[in-house]
Length: 70
Image (cartoon, rainbow, N blue to C red):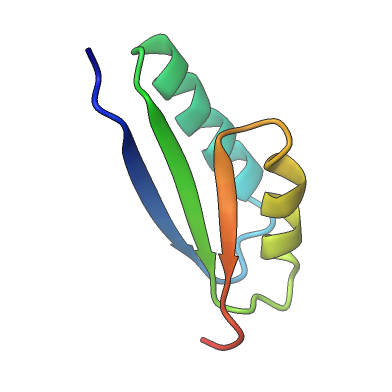
């Protein structure tokens, strides 16, 4: 039985690649029967990284912690 866990991913200006990373992590979780969640900590990225993660939260086991500064 897999233990539940959280994977924390710090980000800043990662909008272009964050979806690919999160989908790959989700696939790895599923393929290996892992009970995990992904927490993205976004340091107020001006490129909209946090918004991308928020959109993906409806599809993937991810949530975004939005920091107001770096």
